[in-house]
Image 1 (cartoon, rainbow, N blue to C red):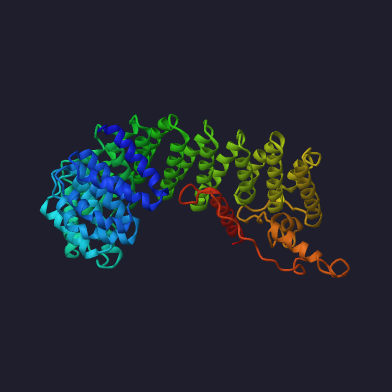
Image 2 (image 1 turned 45 degrees about the vertical axis):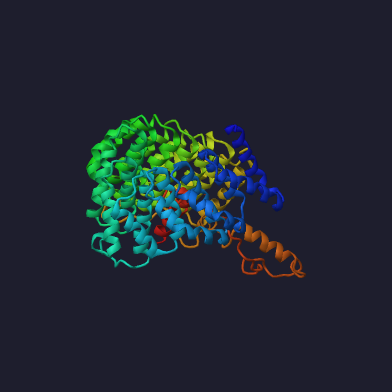
Length: 587
């Protein structure tokens, strides 16, 4: 009669039943069946849970009568235990599911129970039984939504979710023509949307939020149908409960992606949340404002954000940086303000991921908004003057080498690049030497001064830096001898357009320092190895060229883990910007 000891026995049986001999399980089943018919509700509920865990389809048929009686039992504890057990049995195998399907009348009766938890579990089991029957589910949802028999908020939340799923399926399967609103759609579409809208006026916050979230997530929804849900979410934004505020702002932020004008009426409430004590709520408020704000409100928003950013962890800062990047794409005329704002935070305290997200965003903007190229490159130059991350320094130096020579005043970047040769570690020095070489190759007017700088790296202690400088000096010297630079005449007429500062045709420096290999290094290595293994390779008098090498397949690179342009910019954005810069030069 010790309830605690009996519960321990039940738990022990559940754990060891799966490893026992089936013949022994029958004995336990007989004892549990007796407990299932006793007068103590706690024993009956626990016995049902254990039996559902240990019986197979054959034994289930023997105790089916007891379980069906328990489903409609007057005790909520017993009825809930029977319904949850039936749900587990339904998911176990097809034989058990076929037996549970026969209990549909008892399950439907359980939805009228005065116990809210019983209604919740009964609704859940009914969905399991009918989820593959579209018409049956529509009838179930229509029946419960019109009769108002469900009083449990949890059960109503399930009903809202099932309704939203059916409405989504109506659109996905083509039963609603494109451009048709839910209020003018099929019979079920009208009744389903009417139920969701009516749920917005329920007394339970949980049901109201679930209905608003469901309406906002409906595909192809019209603004007038979305308006009631946004109005409810706007009220939740000022709730004293942090959980309600967070749920509301998260949903509003998602709505702002597709319907920014609908959310713009919440801007005053969103601005109030910037100072919220919960940093997750404040971050979502800022990112939502950046989606819905107008071009005139950007300056005011940036002032608020600048104070907020210094007080939050890096993971929240990265989210805001992504939103600022999207905002710049929306309002390109504000690129100077936004890029300047991002660059200011490059000089503030922050970890590698935060700084990388800003750099990648600026690089993405160079690709998307070409007007930002010069100002962005100068901001990045200032950043590498005091950058503690080698990877970011080398990435920026590579970008400068690719895009800097194509700007109207390429000489302004030489000082920043050469400072890296003097002050940085070996990896950054090698990247700086490579960038200087590209400037000299693409801008003949700068070759003399850059040659002087490169010669200072011929005695560098790092092999890679020294070798790059040696190759560049040798190639540039030959190019300067073969194609000497002729400065434009200072007495020329102002109307005369000066000759472009580009290498001449056949310039060896442009070929060696700017032209890429026709294949990757990995492929070249495997091709040469295959060539050497040929019997006559080493004795042949034929000149070794790329065309004479054996053809080998290119290995597919694994997908990079960096974010794409849509999210942060990522190193993919750098390569896209570089490709765009090369394409613009060729044109």
